[in-house]
Length: 209
Image 1 (tube, rainbow, N blue to C red):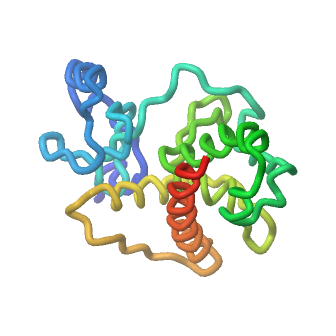
Image 2 (cartoon, rainbow, N blue to C red; image 1 turned 180 degrees about the vertical axis):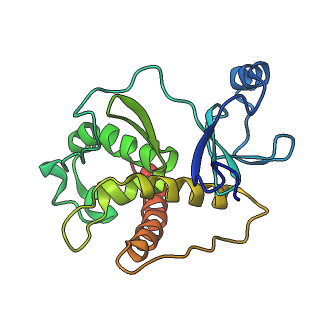
C-alpha cells in the first residue's frame, strides 16, 4: 500500500530549514533566487527573504515571506479595473508623446503593476495571506480568455509556483506537464510570453520617464 499522503501534490513543510538559519539569512537577505544545494531547495523569492517552504511533486520550494500588512479587500481574488485614462495609450510611442503631468500621475501605478508582474502578488483569500507568482498575476490581471478575464483557481496557483521554480532552477531543462483539453495551458504560455515582451518594453519605458 502507498504511504499516507504520498499523492499529496502540494504540502506546506514545517521546520524544513532550522528557524535560526531562516532568521539569519532573512536578516541578511541572502537567500539567492534559484537552487540552494545546501538545503535542496529552490528559492523563488527575489528579495533575499523566504517564508513558507512548500513541496510540489517532490520539489521543495521557498516562497517569498508574506508582508506584515496586506491590503484588505474582498477577501478573495478580484481583478483591479484598468484606469480609463490609460486606455488610449497603446504603445511606448504614445506614452512618450504624453505631457509630463500625465506621466507623473500614472508612473507609480505602472511601476507597481510591473513590480507585481516581476515579484508576485499577495492578497487575502478567505482571511489567509495568499501568494501568486508574477506570471500568475499577469495571467489573472492582464490576460483575456474566451469568456473574459480568468477566475482564480488554486490548481493554477500551484502550477505557476512550480513553473517559477523550474525557471529559477539552473538544473532544470523544463517541465513535463500532462494536461487535459480546455485546461487553459495554451493561454498560460501565451500570457508568459506576452509578459516577457511587456517587461522588455517597460525597461525602455523607464528610460523615457
